Length: 493
Image (cartoon, rainbow, N blue to C red):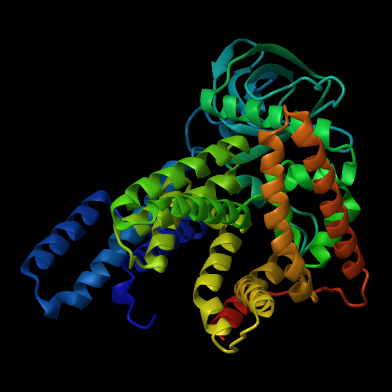
């Protein structure tokens, strides 16, 4: 990857992301006027038409400036807190407000967490239209039947989210800001349901389908630990996961299995690609049929998981990969991945601040770049040992790419990640495949019952191995604190 001219989207996406980050930290100081951007584009077009090599350096500078500025302007337009009727400017005068639930309510230990989008506030004299999101906590018993799209009347006013009190503490306020949430409120019982109007019919249908799938799996798998892992791994629902089990998976470097994302979508893409090739769609003339069918199946799976953000990111990434293959057998994977990242950042520029987004792309880039180099170091002729070596190389490549960032955010490192991933990655493949088969056959008890039994046994075995490895001495190195500069220097090395 020494000749960057061969990777145009890699350069463009980097400049676009840099513009987003620069505007987030520096604000309007780095914004370029539209007339300046237009002038830069005209100069670029004029020099490009002349096709003179002596202007290549200037063309590169102009392109980086334009894309950098567009990234900054995209974040400026994405942020809505500067609007006159935003909650940040009118929340102090609120005595009550009306809002719609715009996310699936999450059950906590003592409350129900909901993301509310406010559309009107009561000032004591009249109702005024407004906008803004609130991170709200409601009484769990009263909010049992709350769902996406429910309209609420809430007494009181939301408060601006407070920053962390201790140094080194997780910046929950910053996390909420990246999701355009600036307020929170512990509502308790001070709310009433006044109607239902889903902001997105597609999202409502996806959530309904996911809830149906959760009921089907829950009715077939009675063991709570096996049910929790199945729901998390297949549908991305983590409500039934045991805290001790989560800690064990985290300590062994296997937590990525319990978060539906790139690994799971990649497994489904590989399965679909394999079967479509088997029926003859691998021929050159069928390349677009292969791409369209595989992408369609991936988006059906995304719908099945309720169109969760992590799955949408992964499906978008593999959509670009599939169409990149259709365009050319020799398409550049780095360009394809960078193009998918840029598309996602155009949709939501704050994704660049998302830990999941950063780790997903770093892991994929690490696997694509490092895994082949590691795999070629040792030639293994025995089939089973060769598969073990291949999985080991994937694990090392992903860990090398993500370890500095993981230590920056989570202050720990799993010592036995190589060992745990040797069985976790194949197990994820088997569990995901069986879980999807269980959903398909859920209404046929003669097939679903033995599948549910087999799935329970497999997950029980995997859970036991994970808990056993997590109990080993030094399974997790804790207390690792890196600065952002430290992290950049480690990546540079």
